[in-house]
Length: 336
Image (cartoon, rainbow, N blue to C red):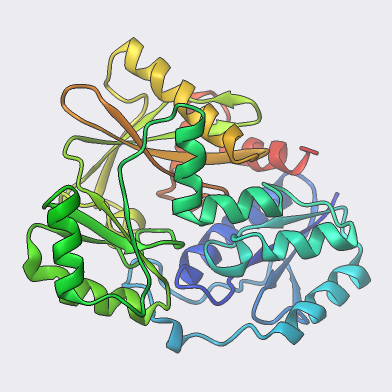
């Protein structure tokens, strides 16, 4: 097949996307496909697999949006023209965050009838909007933490402190309402960290979601097709699964299958598949959970374009199921 891998883009997850895209493109080429790569900030430039678009290091702090080249609306038209001219059999989006994952790109591909890997526009938009996703989780019986929503305009430390104290108290997690890769995530042990957290999220230009911090295990479930794979337990050495822990080798231990009971594995898989289906996802996703010491599960979010880097979780879960990385991406490219 002729496949175009879309990667890069302008979101704060750009560096991860470039790494994922390079890995996916290489694996597809090794499977015998004709593969080309396009950086979403430069859709006119299309390069063959042997030419690397990746010249940045993932294991660094993510950049602020002001440091990135802007993907202007006119470039979306250029991208569609590029795809129309190249006439790929399928597009493989490897874009994390921003318009590459929030449904806008998917809507454009749907409108012009270009097949693509991953969830459609509606499911992508719902998954990226964490408060809306949590509403759908509750509707199908998937437990999720309570949340406080605050617009960036009205956020101030005193208001946030009052709302946290009134709702669930400290410790609390504060993060953007529509971003991934733990970018902009802060864990507040008390009110002293609120001002720094608000400043960091405002710089990313997102509204704010606050949840109670749930002590216990960090777990994730990969959904591939209509099957939930073995859960993985995530143990960051620093105690918090932040950006550096996610994308720096040796900073986190991954246990697959997760060392939990058979009953807990079944519940994780059941909830993971339910959350995936509640949003209308297709092909694959990764569903993140916290589990208390008492075994209570809470679904945090669904990732519709999960990472495909050397430390990423979907390839690890697939490997546990006997599917190597090249087989995984080849299978995804063949899904319709």
